[in-house]
Length: 340
Image 1 (cartoon, rainbow, N blue to C red):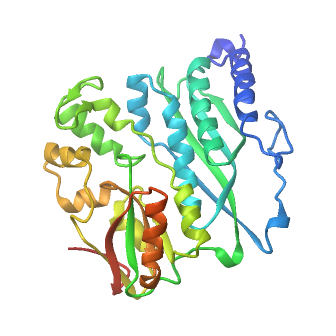
Image 2: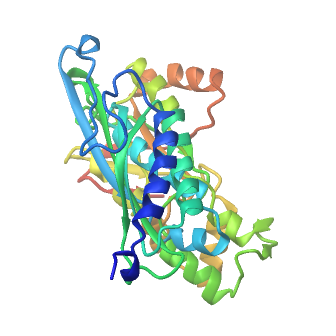
C-alpha cells in the first residue's frame, strides 16, 4: 500500500504548494530571507527604525463562517477575513504587521480550493503590508468531511516600546468613537447560521427582503482591516486605547483595555445598527443583552480619545473620509460596559 491508498496524495500536495509558493512570494518584502518550503520562515527585523522594538503576536481562526463558505463555494474571502482579523488584533496595540503564517487542514486536498484560499491570504497580506512567509497545509483524511477544511493564522508585528497602546492611559471623560463594521466579520456565526438556515429556513442563495441581498452574501461580507485608520490615530498620538470588537461584542472586548477604576458608557442609538443584526434579533427573538454579547452590532473598532484631542481627531477622520460615530465616554467604575 501507499500513502495515497490511505487518502493522502503527496503529489497533489506538492503541486498545490508550488502554487502557494508563487502567491506567497508576491507578498515578500526585502526583510524576508527565506523561500517557501523551508522548515522555518526567516525574517530580518529592521532595527534601524526602532530604538526599542517590541514584537507583538496573535493567532486566530475564521470559525464557523467557513460553513457558509463551503455551501457557497466561496473560498477567497475567508483568507482575507483571517488576515484582517489578525492584523486588527495587533494594530490596536500600536503594532504594524511584519509577517503572517497560515495553517490549512483538510481531508482531501483540492488544489483549486487551496489556491483560492491562499490567494485571499496573499491579497490581504499585500494590502496590509505584511509578508506571507510560510505555513502548513495538512491532509487529514477521515478527520474532515469531504469539501471541508479548517483555517487558522498567526501574525507577528512590531511597535516601539514607548508607543505600545494598552489602555493604561485611559482617563475618566475620554471620548469613545466607533468605526463601522462590514457585517458579522468573523464572529457569532454559530448563532447566525442557526437562525438563518434552521429557524428561518433560508437557503444560502435565497434573496432576503429585509436585507436587500441574498442570505449567503450577507453572511460572507469580508472582515474589515482597520490598519490604515489606526495608523493615522497612532501617528498623531491621538488614542489612549483601542479595542477590536470580535467575539463577545462590545460587552466583553472593551473592558479588556479599561483600567480597573474606569467603566465605559455606551449610548445605544448613536450609530446605525446594520440590517442583518436587526433581522437576526427578530428571527430568534434574541434578547438585547445576548445580541450585545455575541455580535459587533455594526461597530468593529472602538478608539478611546482624550477629550481635548477629539476635535483634532474628528477633523483628521473627516479629511480622510473615514466614517465614525461618537458612541460614548469613560466614567468612574469597575471596568464594565454600561449601555444607556
